[in-house]
Length: 259
Ligand code: F6R
Image (cartoon, rainbow, N blue to C red; front, side, top):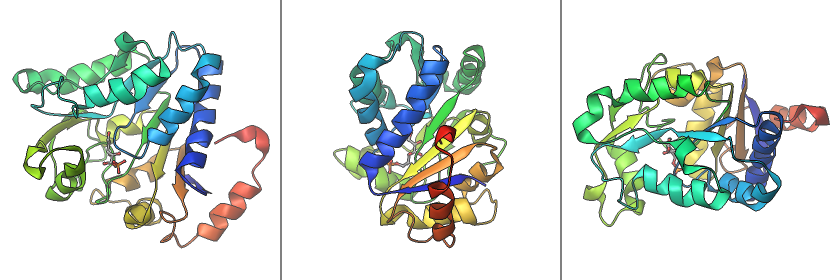
């Protein structure tokens, strides 16, 4: 199963995951990072920005998980803009090496396959950072998504559109469609790191980690991965049946192992 690490807060999670990313980049200068957007991974990006000067990031590349369809890339909430503002600029990644699926409606039919080819050409994703939606989505793979799915267009659920309305002036502005790495794409990454904070994520975390494998709970796909780490705060961990065991296992883990 995934390794579950329960931390005090998002800041501690950010430091822990930034440690894993730093050690990856130190041993592999051309590391490929999978980049989630949304609120959850911000602590990781902030912690990485703080240590960027001690890392050689010139050959590091990145692939965002998803993008809205039909939102101009110049829109401040397009994931291209968000990734530039919150990841590329503060951390100092080479913008030419950071990719976001192309949500242009005119070329959308071929954009998924093109993105898959680009990931393969880069050598695959080494470490994929994931958030989880309140309905259990990872990337924008909404409930019902195939575990074998690759990058493609999805329709956002009303719940996800409501959740993301906070980034827009009005709920109606949240696009209805997105292009997202599939669950199959995500499962090809070498290491999955899923983060979640707050009580609002507790059900999705418990169902993803301890529930049955089901397309109805896309986060449960991480149970199929040989190296998945779930980093959560106490509130997000509050519905886990085996929380004490996870704490015990982590406390007795050898220091050299990392996450
Ligand atoms: C974003 C993404 C989504 C988010 C999820 C949680 O690229 O892939 O799966 O991680 O919607 O969003 P936040 O972190 O804003 O709660």
